Length: 250
Image 1 (cartoon, rainbow, N blue to C red):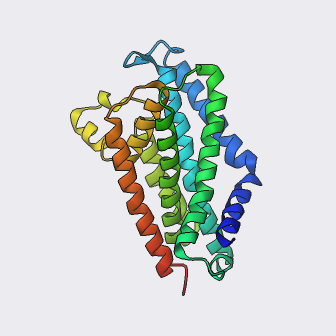
Image 2: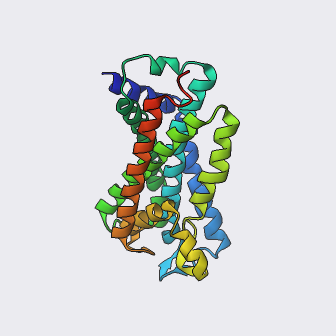
């Protein structure tokens, strides 16, 4: 009951401001699509034989999923700490695992909801199909989980809104934009290709793109393995932080 209550709290929190948490990211995706399509000659450019708008669409969808899953958990914790009502979550007999699962579940729900809404909004302009539904599901779920976990870590670490804004601006946004969202990493110089493959966000976007249009810049199985390992490590770290009460308990 405690876990379910915490999950509902997190979901209702972002549903109460649906325009800001779901509608705004969808509009942002459409604006990115319009700007890049017009700037590059209305679809005359292609990547690996795929029209650029079709190549771009999966990256835009995934980018919004990543950013919103992170925003949900990080903002929830920072607001609770700043307002002083984090005690309402810490006092009930919830285990560290239940706290982790409740917050992650809320972040994943927002990330996946934004992804579905963005996909539906973009589809009339692109008309893409579905190449591998399992890949879409796997990478969509794991992407939302990864950023929800990162959001918890950032929210626990941050003491004020400026701190979490710094994480968003200097970590999440650069990793999102430099992960192959707008381009194929195979076009980068050799040294930068290696750097790109160190970015876990690259595998999320690459695998999700494969699920929709069937194109990937790296082996899909490798990306699936790396994503799973990163999520296990992040879950373990998050659980440990909540179990010890780091920056949450006096």
